[in-house]
Length: 481
Image (cartoon, rainbow, N blue to C red):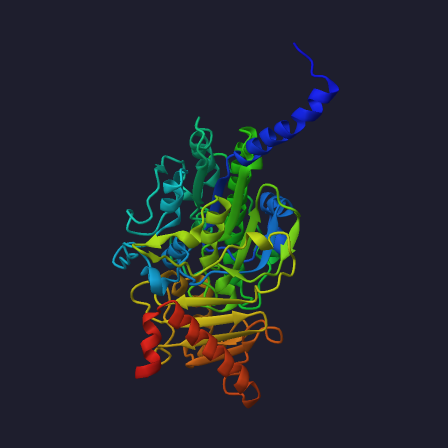
């Protein structure tokens, strides 16, 4: 083999460097979005020292943990449509659940994340919970089926994803990996003991080492009542979360064994808050402040926490930018197509980035029988909630109302639920204003306090402006009510 002289090597170095740069840039930029169902900030990396989530904690050490990440609506289908469209529900049309008699649909003119990635040359696959419609709008190339235990066995879901992940192709891939854990499910027992069926813990799952928790060991957050019923349910919820963690670990193991981990963006998030009254279906922080762990190739810094305020409308723009797609150039006919979010790739290595200090939320339904439109602006210090149907009592999701935690409150006649009065939870005023820094449990409503009238007017003005910009149909309420 011919050897190059010293001078030849010097002249060839720029060409070699260019070749290596092309190789680096040509590396596949795969995306895994791991979406769990109804998990709050309950993980080791978020400060819970009881629950066992070693794989999620490891992912956080290899990426970025967001402390101020928010869904825009604390309801399954509605939230998932935001995740996959980058649009608030009042614009995408998926106001609530798609299944059964609810039957909400997104508008047919939506440019969804999976379709945009597919058009850009990505292989796309969905495994586990889907829960949006119409399929033509949220179309994936493949729907991976046949996992033992259904979408409550994330280890099996990871295993059946391997063939798609390792497919011999020069195309990058997008894997939408959605568990049904730790969603509440099965049975409506209202007396102790409740058994393991509430959170999918009533069957065996291949490849899963079930981790059980004693009710006396769980951490009861301030928004929940410290009762035997609540502790028993939290123990079951913890077990379901630990099952998810094992699936995440198996999926990362598959990526690494196939030499794809270093070329893959991984996002771990929840669709909405924990399935207990006071969290899910509400836009109090337990319903909307959620886990978000993001790990990307070539991050400047790892094992980092950022306080950037992001929301689920930001997910689609972020993934599109990572994939090299200029989402600002997407058209709707001849007109620009505008997402409601922006890419947060720039903040992954920044603990305190400027400019990321406000999010908005828009909720209208959960089940179709649960009409209660709320619009929210949340800054780092304040939250303003506009309850457009405040004349109505706050509606319950059927499973939350039947939960032993809530039924225990009713049976006991307790006046308080966590830190909040039961009466104020059920009957809400039109305006709610909270100083989150001084009152993180959102108990003291400052809307009628003269000292905060200027703050209230400022937030109301900003919220109305956002509703106008995003073409919220409920903007007419300002005129007619």
